[in-house]
Length: 58
Image: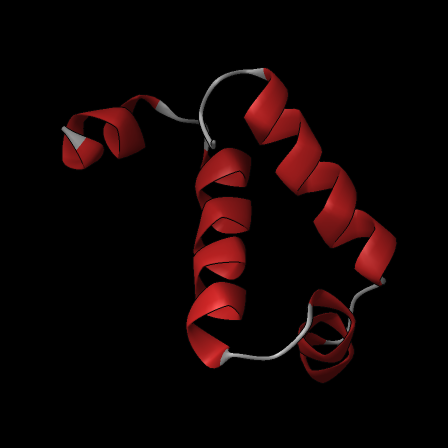
């Protein structure tokens, strides 16, 4: 199921899902994770919200 979902997503959506999953797996806060990856935490929050609004993330 997840494989089918992932293949139907845009490259950008897959990029952010991978970061969100990596953040959750790291045990770091979103603020800490974003800082280590070099992007603003607001971008991570906004991407997560957009994906949730589309029903891709819960």
